[in-house]
Every structure is written in structure tokens, then in C-alpha cells.
Length: 515
Image: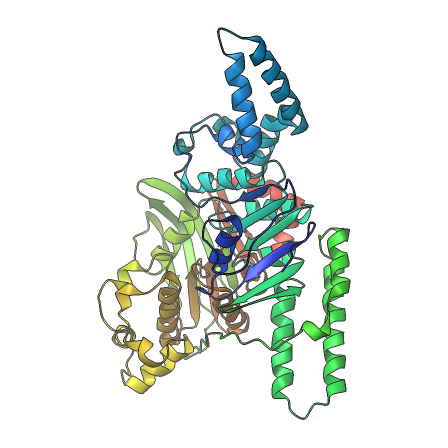
């Protein structure tokens, strides 16, 4: 498998399939059992570091410049020579050599380039000369991302680069990578991000790795189409071929309108119907069936105020939820949404104000933190039975099976589940409630792409109301028809698409005034 400059490869696969291990094999952190990895002569490799404490005692700006190790070493050796009290002729010769190397690597612009990356990622100039340990966890993530991008490496490996990033920073990173001319390999669960940057998809399915032209949506939609064709035995081969060709034509037309560079758009010409294969992926069966339709009175919030550990996050928050509203709540401080949702679910007391649910309303809540639910070492089937009137094994197996727990897996202890398995269990718990209002705090956390896609598709079709927060662009854009942004200085409430909301210049000005 060969990765070519100018292309961006989105790496996909179920949780545990080996995506991160594949990247680690490429940069040498784990040894491959067979085969080899080689780079072009003199090519530089840069990797997004996962250890957030490695550079704690380093200055922020220096941490970014360390991303180009050779440049950093040359700079340090040069500075050490110049600081010598007894500067010899040999030192002069060596300093001249280092100056030449430093200039070749554009070293004189290194500091301003590092500062520019930090600013683009939302790290204010006042933080550039602080030690990394003085920054918050989310700010550290941005600094380490700037480190990986610094110096335009020939090969860039990014494992979940959008984790802990706000939506504005993800958008900045999309634009940066879209115009990046070297080789990029990215593991991500963010479909909008993958679609925006990828020219190719690397599908890791346990023992097999396959490379396809096209982004994640192309892979998903084409593989689903091929699966439907496989099941439609009565269709003739010519009909199937025509259907696939029409799909590629529609997909290519959409990409032509996107923000991809011209060179990347040319890759679409290489899409090939021979590569389209049915998907073997398993998708959870997420089905929400409200026991009754919501009435006209859904939720009235009046002058609500909420705080966290003594800090006021919002005040005088008022809104009315109307029939068919699917609302995303946004804020630069994500604690605002968690506090609001906890108040609306009766888990936390409001500092001021009131809220009232309509009489026809039943809610189901997916909280951000779920560890409290999984402390007892009880089998999954007993865990789920706590939330059901029908506790028969057959009934429980049905719900757990929809969440991809089959056979003996239903007897696995709840306290040893992975993050993704816990969220799938929490979704099964929600399904049992037959609620007509879903409250979702960052619902895609810990889920793999298959679960995210299934969840997304279900919420698009859901007949009740949705109140949610999310950092998944595609989730928001495809599900929500109303946006409420909460800031310390006020609220913006708009009935519109998310894409229109973030692109509107007037709204952008309003958003800046919120904080």
C-alpha cells in the first residue's frame, strides 16, 4: 500500500479493529510482525502526541517548535555556541554551518509560524510564553496539534485530532488540512471532518486493510447501495451497473461544490464502480418509539440560571420548545449544556428561574458522564432489567442484541465495559423508556463510526423533540432545525440550519458579543 503526497487518507474501522495500532506501526512505536514501512529520502514524519504531560515544563511556543526536531536541535546547538564565554575558531566554523542549515529550514520564521498556528487554533498570544502545565487540558490538546502541524511535515499522522476541540477549531483544522499539500493519514470518528479532508479511505476490518478512492460518505453510501443490490436478486447486472454509475455521478457533483482543492477534486475522476463492495460492518439497531405523540405544550423555560462549583454559567435563560423542534445547544463553555440538561432532568437545582414540562411529555436522557450507572459488578442482562417492566431473558436479549451484545456477552459484568459499550447500554436504556423527548449531552462520545451513523439516522427520523449538545458537525446539521447558543452575556436563538448559522456574518458578530 502506497500513500502519495497531496492525498489525505481517512482511516476507518470498528473500535478495536486496529486503527491506532496501524498508525503506531507506521511511526515505529509498535513493531510489525510482517512487512516493512519506508519513507522517501529525507522525508520528515510528524505525529500528534497523545501524552498531554510530556511537555508540561516547556514553554508553549517552544513546545510547538519542537515538532520540527531537526530545526529545534540546530537552533539549540547554535544558541549554545553563541552563549559560550570562550568562543573559538572551531565554534565559529560550526556556527556558520548551523546558520546555513537554520536558514535552509526557514528557521528565522519559525517563531512567527508557531505563533500563527497557535492563534489559528485559538490559543491567545498571552499564553504563548507560559509553561504548558499552566494551560487547561483542552488548550494543551491544541498546542500538541500545532506541534504536529509545525514546519509542514512531509508525512502527517493524526490519531483522533478533533477530540476535545470546539467546533470552530475543528473548522479551522479542516481548512488547514484541505490545503495541505503533503501526505496526511487521519483516524477520526468525526464524519464531517473526514468528508471535508479525505481523498481516500483506508478501511481496517480486523485482518484486512483495503484502500478506496473517495471519502467516508462515499464509502458508506456506496457500500450500503452494494449491499442492497446484493439482496435484490431479481435486478439485472446492467441495471445494477447503471445504478452505481449514477451514484458516482451524484457524489462527484457534490464534491465539485465542496471546499476541496482542485488537485483533490481531480481524485474524484478515479472513483471506480469495480471498487464498490457490500459492507460487512454491523450497525446497532437504535430505534426510538414514543408511546404517545407530544402535545402542544412541551417545555417552558423562564429566567433560568445555572452554575457549576460557584461559577455562574448562564442566567435569565428563557425559551419555549415548540412541536417538531430539534434543538442543539451551543456554548464555548460546554459545562453550560451539562448543567442545563441536569436541571431539566431534575438532577440539579437551578440557581434561579423555573421550567415546566408539558403533561404529555416523557423524557429520556443520555448524560455526558455515565460512570455512576456502571459501578455494580452485575451481568448486563440484569443491569438493563433494572430499567424495564418486562425482565424476561428473551425481552432483554432483544434490546441488548440490537446494541450488538450477543450470545454470552449479555452476561458480561457492567463494571468492566469499555466507553463505547457503556454508551450503547445507555442507549438501550433510553429505548426502553418509549419517550417523546430525547435529551442528549454529547451523544457521539466513545462511539465508533457505525454506532454514530446508526444513531444519526434514527434521530433524523425521530417523531418527537430533541434537545442536545454535540461537537459532531454532521449530527447537528442533519438532525437539528433550531440553535440556541448560551454565553455569559446572553443567548442567541435561531431557527435555521447549523451550516447557515456558522457562515452568517451578522450572527458571527452576535456570537462574539456573547462571550
